[in-house]
Amino acid sequence: MAQAGCADCKFREKYDRHPASFLGRLWRWHAGWCPGFKSYMRSLPDEERLKLAERYSLPRYK
Image (cartoon, rainbow, N blue to C red; front, side, top):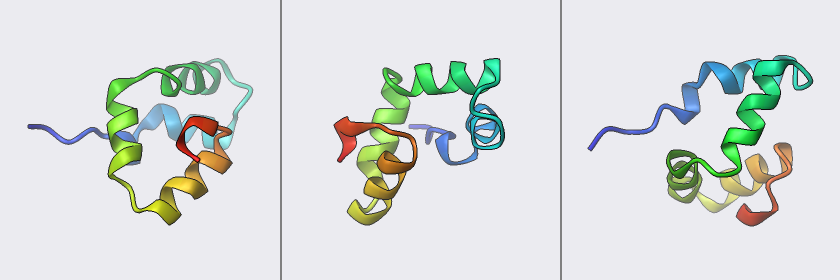
């Protein structure tokens, strides 16, 4: 099974640089429901998952 490219996602990179941009906001909306991103977050160690959840304001992963 293919691994999700969430760690290297170009849209996520755009969000990191310019969160208010259209593509940045699109990524943030997408991250809220994407099954690939959910499995990516579940695959991370607790410390890293909590750090990303805080950074991207994703309370479901805290």
